Structure formats: structure tokens, C-alpha cells
Figure 1: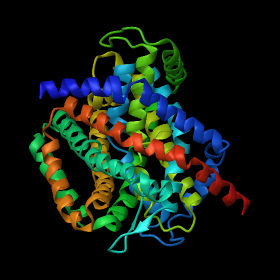
Figure 2: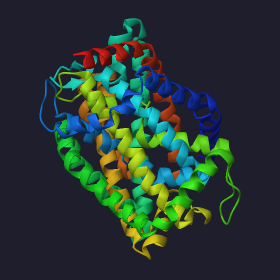
Figure 3: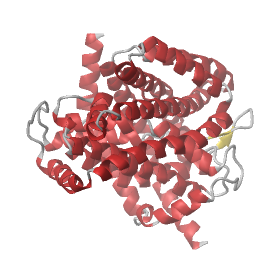
Length: 445
């Protein structure tokens, strides 16, 4: 295990999440943002208007547009918003938050383009379900000769789900509940598996029903609590922003238990954890948006981009401000433990309960959302006959993940995320002229 962990660490840090991948994600987002003439930034109010009307069906599909976004956000809003932000700050300093914001702003165009293509090139499977995502827009948009690239994405998506969407989530919950309530990890893993099974066996419609109710409630609870803590220390907010911006461009000196971080570390961990949190560029979210009941790909694209906005620019920002204002990032902690300490310091002892509850709910919905993503990847590779065996295997992996080494799980998730992103970014760049054309035609009409 030690040898494998060291190899994954080298592969993640020097190859898959080194300068080339960060450059590719950033440049793709910037290219799409400029190619769309900043429309993803200018039309944020318009997108929220579409979301407000998105609870009703508006075309063919399996679930309403709002439910598609909630399903995507159920997978997106997870440990990345709590443990991921804390890891970014612990490894890259407060400046990592600034680079998380930057990748989110351009990532909105990436997410928009993914959803537009997913709806444009979706299909119906043998059982009548609407299916789509990078593997379909690669096959149907780029041509049959690129079919191998679509299959490659599906393989990476299938495997990545067991990292980012399953074992990372159950592992983080088990750690949080062990620290807060001394609940043994096997017990946590077993309970998560049983509850997940009750939902997953009902397919996308049941997942969407649960996500549409649970995601808004848990986000409001966590964001509302974190925002209240920030407002109670409002006088420290300007200094916190100053620290974040200064660290982003000048690095962070060693202080207390914090070992110090260079500007490059802030950029690397900010972008890597930002993408881990909002998933823009990975190609996961469009799999959910492909099931939306909509008659126009562009409409769903605007709804989809709000996932990145809400995930990183709202939820991650609240977590990051609490961490910086509290000063807990200088104590040497990392992951969910750092977030718990931060909330504890600002709430005089109650924060750990808020974080433990938030992490549990976030991680549970991520397990649900990512099960759908990986299931669609399995179906693309092996057909509808693979669906039930996949669901059983997914459920069994939950308790197993709760007992794995956290360092190993995070490393594996990082590696598989990057491997998903490569074929998806190629497809986004190749099909970007179509995205620009569909967007122009939509507003012309």
C-alpha cells in the first residue's frame, strides 16, 4: 500500500495535476468564456430566472430542469466544500481560495458548454431513459472515429465514481463522526450503505426526488450557519479578504503549525480542489443534465452553470472565510478536522456538530449523484444489463471506503479526476464552434 500511495502521489503531483493539467483546465475555461463573449458572467440573473421556472417539464426528458441541477449538485456539493477547501488552505495557504474563485468563474462557461452538448447529443437507451454526457457528445458530435475517446471517458468515469463519488465521501463522513461523536467507522459505513440502497435502487427519478428536497435544505442550513458566524465577526472580513489576495500573489510564510506555501502551491491546490469541488471540466455534471425535460440545450446550459456558481462562489467561499477568520489554518490541521476546528472557534464549541451534520448530508447526496454518473458510464460500456450489478457493487463499496486510508483515497480521487478531464476537454474544444453557434441562434430567436 505504501508503494502504491507513493506512486499515486508522484503521478498526481507531477503529471496529472501538474502544470499541464492546470493549464489545460484554465485555458479551456478562458477560451470558452471569451468565445461566448462573457455571456456566462453577464447572464447570471437570466440563469436564475430560468432556474425558478425549471420545476416544470419543458420538453422531452426524464426529470424537470430544476431536478437535473439538484441531481448534479447532489454530486457536486460534497466533501470538496468542507474537507476540500480546508485541504486547499492547509496545503496552499489562504491564497488558494482566490484561485478557486478564478477557476470557478471560467468554469461556469465550461459547465455551460458541457450541458449544452449533453442535451444536444443525448440518446434514449433500450429502456427509454434519456442518456447523455461526454461519451455521447464525443461519439455523436465528433464522429465514429472518435468512439474510442468516448469509451475512454466512460471507463475513467466508471472508475472515478468509486473514488470521488463513493469512497472519498464515506471515508470523510466516517472520520467526521468518529471525531465528533466517537461512532466507529464500520457502523457509519454500514448505515450509509443501507440508506443509499433504499434510494439508488429506484433509479434516476427517485434520486432526483430526494436531491430536489435534500440539496436545497442542506445547502441553506450549512451556508446559513457559516454566514451567521462570518457576520458575527464582520469586522474581520476585510482583513480576511486582504490575507487571501495577498497570499494568492505573494505566497504564505510559515506561521504556527502552518509550514508555509509558495504562490505555485496556492495556484495548484486552489485549482485542483476547486475543480474537485465544482467538477467543471470533468464531464460528470452533463450526465445528469442530459436527463432534463427541456426542448433547448442552451436553456439547460444556463441552469447547469449555476451549479458551479453556487458550489464554489457561495458554499466554498463561506467555508474558506470561516477558516481564515478563525485562524485555525495556522494550527496544523487539515481536511474536515480543520473546518471543524474553525467552526468551533467561531461558535464557542458548537461548530463541530454543524460540520459533522453538513459533511454527512453533503457526502450522502454525493454518493447518490455520482452513482448515477458511474451507472451511465457502465451502461455505455456494457449495456443496460450492467445496471443492477453496478448498483450492488456501488453499495458494497460504501462501507469499504469508510475504513480506507484518507491519504490514499484522496490521491486516487485526484488521479481519476484528471483522467476523466482529458477526453472531456478535447471534446469541448473540438465542439466549441457548435456551442457558440447554438448560443447565438438562441438569443437571435
